[in-house]
Image 1 (cartoon, rainbow, N blue to C red):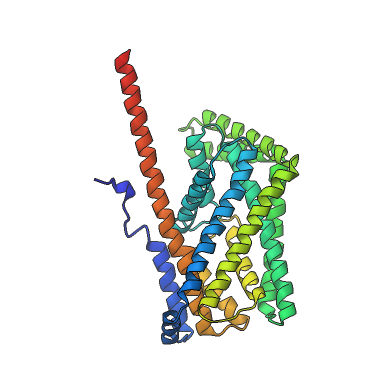
Image 2: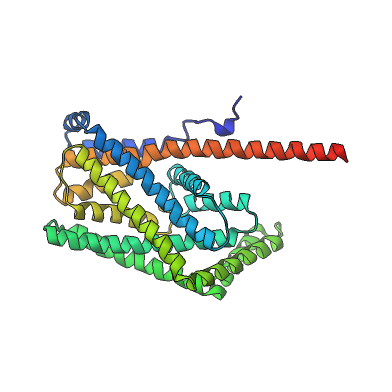
Length: 360
């Protein structure tokens, strides 16, 4: 009998469902013709849509390879298959716990350190560098998208202002994150302040001396790893190359979704929309921006840049089926597999230990 730990409950899909309902409420309020959306979906070009699925899978693979190359440089050896599975697990956690700036990354730290104890500082360093690359790519995407919109005469005043605002905000967070990466004393002071605060709240009930030592050790390993990255531009370039390829594939998947419903869209609209959504989700504030809000934001941005409302809504629905629901169920399957495998390994190790005890 399967453990309850590996069963789906209504709570598992609650937030994505709420997001979907919120999006349909948005369509109803703004009088979008839902029968037209249904008719458009019925006439979808399945070949192009399935090609979008394949492109999406490739995007996830190259994203995982980009992260893996950073880990391998720090001597944290992880196979391409495991990195691919761990990224899918992280995607599942991002959707399940809508705080994309932290939940998926924390799950990957847990998975790697569970397998390779004592590597938490290196894993965090790889994820921070990967995030820095993602923020840089988002800024580049916003700039490229804005230029493409100007060239294609699809400029919308509000979209332009929003783009400039997100560029500034992303750059601020980028600079702050880089400062924390290079200023070891700053991070140690922050760690010390947080632990002192927890001790104060606990009124002496918790002895956090061991926790403090472990966290400081991981922080020193993190900064040591960051210094190694600073001396290895080739390793960073290799990872960045794979990341950019993954980003281009994500744009290609979105373009194929529009093509599957017979609508030719300007590349600038795709780039700016995806960059805006990615920039908001990448701001490290734990913003719940995975269910409902992205659909509304994407559809609204498309409309503001000249896409007909029904086409915008249809493309958004089809896109989110791929980027949320397909990813959700693939990620859930990976989570089940990794959990069952971990239990099997624990059971095998237990039997081996018992056997060794009986021999002695």
